[in-house]
Image 1 (cartoon, rainbow, N blue to C red):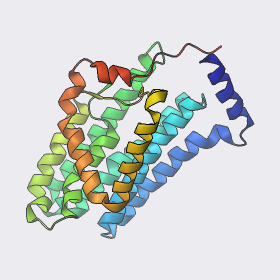
Image 2 (image 1 turned 135 degrees about the horizontal axis):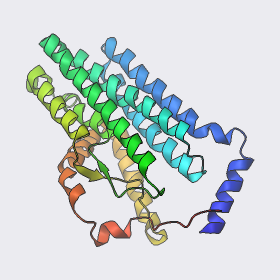
Image 3 (image 1 turned 60 degrees about the vertical axis):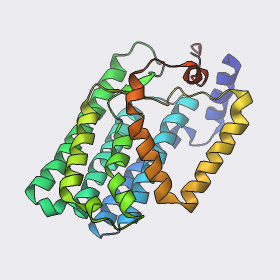
Image 4 (image 1 turned 60 degrees about the horizontal axis):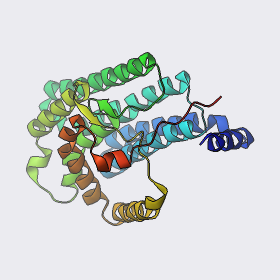
Length: 261
Protein backbone atom coordinates (compact mmCIF):
# COMPACT_ATOMS: atom_id res chain seq x y z
CA UNK A 1 0.00 0.00 0.00
CA UNK A 2 2.89 2.37 0.83
CA UNK A 3 4.49 1.75 -2.58
CA UNK A 4 1.17 2.67 -4.18
CA UNK A 5 1.12 6.01 -2.39
CA UNK A 6 4.70 6.72 -3.49
CA UNK A 7 3.76 5.97 -7.12
CA UNK A 8 0.79 8.33 -6.90
CA UNK A 9 2.95 11.04 -5.35
CA UNK A 10 5.48 10.66 -8.15
CA UNK A 11 2.72 10.90 -10.75
CA UNK A 12 1.47 14.08 -9.09
CA UNK A 13 4.92 15.67 -9.23
CA UNK A 14 5.43 14.68 -12.88
CA UNK A 15 2.14 16.14 -14.11
CA UNK A 16 2.42 19.75 -15.30
CA UNK A 17 -0.13 21.89 -13.48
CA UNK A 18 -1.16 18.72 -11.63
CA UNK A 19 -1.42 20.56 -8.33
CA UNK A 20 -4.13 22.81 -9.74
CA UNK A 21 -6.41 20.07 -11.10
CA UNK A 22 -8.69 19.68 -8.02
CA UNK A 23 -9.21 23.43 -7.56
CA UNK A 24 -9.74 23.87 -11.31
CA UNK A 25 -12.50 21.25 -11.18
CA UNK A 26 -14.02 23.02 -8.17
CA UNK A 27 -14.08 26.35 -10.01
CA UNK A 28 -15.53 24.66 -13.09
CA UNK A 29 -18.29 23.24 -10.90
CA UNK A 30 -18.96 26.70 -9.46
CA UNK A 31 -19.24 28.16 -12.97
CA UNK A 32 -21.55 25.32 -14.00
CA UNK A 33 -23.79 25.98 -10.99
CA UNK A 34 -23.87 29.69 -11.79
CA UNK A 35 -24.80 28.82 -15.38
CA UNK A 36 -27.79 26.90 -14.01
CA UNK A 37 -29.05 30.20 -12.56
CA UNK A 38 -28.78 31.80 -15.99
CA UNK A 39 -30.80 28.97 -17.56
CA UNK A 40 -33.38 29.25 -14.78
CA UNK A 41 -33.85 32.98 -15.35
CA UNK A 42 -34.48 32.32 -19.06
CA UNK A 43 -36.88 29.42 -18.43
CA UNK A 44 -34.67 26.65 -19.82
CA UNK A 45 -35.55 24.17 -17.07
CA UNK A 46 -33.96 21.03 -18.48
CA UNK A 47 -30.69 22.79 -19.28
CA UNK A 48 -30.62 24.22 -15.75
CA UNK A 49 -31.10 20.77 -14.21
CA UNK A 50 -28.35 19.33 -16.41
CA UNK A 51 -26.01 22.11 -15.24
CA UNK A 52 -26.71 21.28 -11.58
CA UNK A 53 -26.10 17.58 -12.24
CA UNK A 54 -22.80 18.32 -13.98
CA UNK A 55 -21.79 20.44 -10.99
CA UNK A 56 -22.57 17.44 -8.74
CA UNK A 57 -20.33 15.19 -10.85
CA UNK A 58 -17.50 17.74 -10.72
CA UNK A 59 -17.96 18.08 -6.96
CA UNK A 60 -17.41 14.33 -6.63
CA UNK A 61 -14.37 14.31 -8.90
CA UNK A 62 -12.47 17.20 -7.34
CA UNK A 63 -12.41 15.66 -3.88
CA UNK A 64 -11.49 12.18 -5.09
CA UNK A 65 -8.69 13.49 -7.31
CA UNK A 66 -7.37 15.66 -4.46
CA UNK A 67 -7.24 12.62 -2.15
CA UNK A 68 -5.73 10.43 -4.86
CA UNK A 69 -2.93 12.91 -5.60
CA UNK A 70 -2.41 13.90 -1.97
CA UNK A 71 -3.43 17.50 -2.67
CA UNK A 72 -5.97 18.01 0.10
CA UNK A 73 -5.68 21.43 1.71
CA UNK A 74 -7.70 23.82 3.86
CA UNK A 75 -7.82 26.24 0.95
CA UNK A 76 -9.31 23.57 -1.31
CA UNK A 77 -11.85 22.61 1.34
CA UNK A 78 -13.01 26.21 1.78
CA UNK A 79 -13.16 26.77 -1.98
CA UNK A 80 -15.18 23.58 -2.36
CA UNK A 81 -17.72 24.76 0.23
CA UNK A 82 -18.12 28.14 -1.47
CA UNK A 83 -18.68 26.41 -4.81
CA UNK A 84 -21.19 24.03 -3.20
CA UNK A 85 -23.16 26.94 -1.76
CA UNK A 86 -23.56 28.38 -5.25
CA UNK A 87 -24.15 25.12 -7.14
CA UNK A 88 -26.31 23.27 -4.60
CA UNK A 89 -27.75 26.07 -2.48
CA UNK A 90 -28.41 29.20 -4.50
CA UNK A 91 -28.75 27.68 -7.99
CA UNK A 92 -31.39 24.99 -7.22
CA UNK A 93 -33.30 27.38 -4.94
CA UNK A 94 -33.50 29.99 -7.71
CA UNK A 95 -34.43 27.27 -10.20
CA UNK A 96 -37.35 25.98 -8.11
CA UNK A 97 -38.45 29.54 -7.32
CA UNK A 98 -38.54 30.55 -10.98
CA UNK A 99 -40.29 27.27 -11.87
CA UNK A 100 -43.11 27.39 -9.34
CA UNK A 101 -42.48 29.14 -6.01
CA UNK A 102 -42.84 32.59 -7.56
CA UNK A 103 -46.59 31.96 -7.46
CA UNK A 104 -46.38 32.17 -3.69
CA UNK A 105 -44.91 35.68 -3.89
CA UNK A 106 -43.05 36.58 -0.69
CA UNK A 107 -43.71 33.22 0.98
CA UNK A 108 -42.15 31.33 -1.93
CA UNK A 109 -39.07 33.52 -1.83
CA UNK A 110 -38.72 33.03 1.93
CA UNK A 111 -38.72 29.24 1.46
CA UNK A 112 -36.00 29.60 -1.17
CA UNK A 113 -33.97 31.74 1.23
CA UNK A 114 -34.44 29.20 4.02
CA UNK A 115 -33.04 26.49 1.77
CA UNK A 116 -30.00 28.64 0.96
CA UNK A 117 -29.46 29.42 4.66
CA UNK A 118 -29.73 25.74 5.65
CA UNK A 119 -27.26 24.83 2.91
CA UNK A 120 -24.78 27.41 4.26
CA UNK A 121 -25.23 26.08 7.82
CA UNK A 122 -24.77 22.50 6.62
CA UNK A 123 -21.53 23.37 4.82
CA UNK A 124 -20.16 25.43 7.72
CA UNK A 125 -20.89 22.61 10.17
CA UNK A 126 -19.21 20.10 7.87
CA UNK A 127 -16.07 22.26 7.68
CA UNK A 128 -15.94 22.79 11.43
CA UNK A 129 -16.30 19.06 12.08
CA UNK A 130 -13.54 18.32 9.58
CA UNK A 131 -11.22 20.80 11.36
CA UNK A 132 -11.94 19.19 14.73
CA UNK A 133 -11.06 15.67 13.58
CA UNK A 134 -7.68 14.39 14.72
CA UNK A 135 -7.28 11.87 11.92
CA UNK A 136 -7.94 11.95 8.19
CA UNK A 137 -9.98 8.76 8.02
CA UNK A 138 -13.22 9.39 6.08
CA UNK A 139 -16.33 9.24 8.23
CA UNK A 140 -18.64 6.28 7.85
CA UNK A 141 -21.64 8.59 7.57
CA UNK A 142 -22.56 12.25 7.14
CA UNK A 143 -24.54 14.27 9.64
CA UNK A 144 -27.60 15.51 7.78
CA UNK A 145 -28.29 15.32 4.06
CA UNK A 146 -25.28 16.57 2.03
CA UNK A 147 -25.78 19.69 -0.08
CA UNK A 148 -25.49 17.95 -3.51
CA UNK A 149 -28.04 15.32 -2.48
CA UNK A 150 -30.38 18.01 -1.11
CA UNK A 151 -30.17 19.91 -4.40
CA UNK A 152 -31.11 16.78 -6.35
CA UNK A 153 -34.00 16.04 -3.96
CA UNK A 154 -35.65 19.46 -4.26
CA UNK A 155 -35.42 19.09 -8.05
CA UNK A 156 -37.23 15.74 -7.91
CA UNK A 157 -40.73 17.18 -8.68
CA UNK A 158 -39.24 18.95 -11.70
CA UNK A 159 -37.57 15.74 -12.87
CA UNK A 160 -40.88 13.91 -12.59
CA UNK A 161 -42.67 16.71 -14.48
CA UNK A 162 -40.32 16.22 -17.43
CA UNK A 163 -41.86 12.75 -17.87
CA UNK A 164 -45.50 13.73 -17.59
CA UNK A 165 -47.49 16.94 -17.29
CA UNK A 166 -49.06 16.47 -13.85
CA UNK A 167 -50.32 19.78 -12.44
CA UNK A 168 -49.65 18.83 -8.81
CA UNK A 169 -45.93 18.47 -9.49
CA UNK A 170 -45.75 22.21 -10.16
CA UNK A 171 -47.99 23.21 -7.28
CA UNK A 172 -46.16 25.89 -5.21
CA UNK A 173 -47.57 24.59 -1.91
CA UNK A 174 -46.35 21.06 -2.59
CA UNK A 175 -42.91 22.24 -3.73
CA UNK A 176 -42.65 24.68 -0.84
CA UNK A 177 -43.40 21.96 1.70
CA UNK A 178 -41.00 19.55 -0.01
CA UNK A 179 -38.21 22.14 -0.04
CA UNK A 180 -38.84 22.96 3.63
CA UNK A 181 -38.56 19.25 4.52
CA UNK A 182 -35.26 18.86 2.65
CA UNK A 183 -33.96 22.05 4.29
CA UNK A 184 -34.64 20.56 7.72
CA UNK A 185 -32.96 17.29 6.75
CA UNK A 186 -29.83 19.20 5.71
CA UNK A 187 -29.36 20.78 9.16
CA UNK A 188 -30.64 17.75 11.09
CA UNK A 189 -28.48 15.30 13.04
CA UNK A 190 -29.72 12.42 10.91
CA UNK A 191 -26.83 10.09 9.97
CA UNK A 192 -26.77 9.64 6.20
CA UNK A 193 -24.71 7.28 4.07
CA UNK A 194 -21.24 8.39 3.03
CA UNK A 195 -19.47 7.00 -0.02
CA UNK A 196 -16.12 8.67 0.68
CA UNK A 197 -14.58 5.46 2.00
CA UNK A 198 -16.16 3.28 -0.67
CA UNK A 199 -13.80 0.52 -1.71
CA UNK A 200 -14.26 -2.01 -4.51
CA UNK A 201 -12.29 -5.27 -4.07
CA UNK A 202 -10.27 -6.27 -7.10
CA UNK A 203 -12.26 -9.44 -7.73
CA UNK A 204 -15.46 -7.37 -7.93
CA UNK A 205 -14.04 -4.58 -10.09
CA UNK A 206 -15.35 -6.00 -13.39
CA UNK A 207 -18.98 -6.46 -12.21
CA UNK A 208 -19.00 -3.01 -10.61
CA UNK A 209 -17.66 -1.44 -13.81
CA UNK A 210 -20.34 -3.27 -15.80
CA UNK A 211 -23.06 -1.98 -13.47
CA UNK A 212 -21.63 1.54 -13.67
CA UNK A 213 -21.59 1.37 -17.47
CA UNK A 214 -25.19 0.18 -17.46
CA UNK A 215 -26.23 3.07 -15.22
CA UNK A 216 -24.38 5.53 -17.44
CA UNK A 217 -26.23 4.12 -20.45
CA UNK A 218 -29.54 4.55 -18.62
CA UNK A 219 -28.68 8.19 -17.89
CA UNK A 220 -28.01 8.76 -21.60
CA UNK A 221 -31.11 6.92 -22.87
CA UNK A 222 -33.59 7.73 -20.06
CA UNK A 223 -32.01 10.68 -18.19
CA UNK A 224 -35.03 11.98 -16.28
CA UNK A 225 -36.37 8.57 -15.31
CA UNK A 226 -32.94 7.40 -14.14
CA UNK A 227 -32.26 10.55 -12.11
CA UNK A 228 -35.75 10.43 -10.61
CA UNK A 229 -35.28 6.79 -9.59
CA UNK A 230 -31.88 7.57 -8.06
CA UNK A 231 -33.33 10.45 -6.02
CA UNK A 232 -36.25 8.32 -4.82
CA UNK A 233 -33.96 5.44 -3.85
CA UNK A 234 -31.65 7.81 -1.95
CA UNK A 235 -34.56 9.40 -0.09
CA UNK A 236 -35.97 5.99 0.78
CA UNK A 237 -32.55 4.83 2.03
CA UNK A 238 -32.07 7.75 4.44
CA UNK A 239 -33.15 5.71 7.50
CA UNK A 240 -30.39 3.18 6.73
CA UNK A 241 -27.70 5.70 7.62
CA UNK A 242 -28.27 5.19 11.35
CA UNK A 243 -27.94 1.40 11.15
CA UNK A 244 -24.60 -0.31 11.89
CA UNK A 245 -22.81 -1.49 8.74
CA UNK A 246 -23.72 -5.02 7.74
CA UNK A 247 -21.40 -7.60 6.15
CA UNK A 248 -22.09 -6.36 2.60
CA UNK A 249 -21.40 -2.75 3.50
CA UNK A 250 -18.26 -3.70 5.42
CA UNK A 251 -17.04 -5.59 2.38
CA UNK A 252 -17.11 -2.39 0.32
CA UNK A 253 -15.55 -0.19 3.01
CA UNK A 254 -11.97 0.85 2.41
CA UNK A 255 -9.54 -0.40 5.07
CA UNK A 256 -7.65 2.28 6.92
CA UNK A 257 -4.52 3.20 5.00
CA UNK A 258 -1.26 3.58 6.91
CA UNK A 259 0.16 7.08 7.18
CA UNK A 260 2.65 8.14 4.55
CA UNK A 261 6.01 9.54 5.61
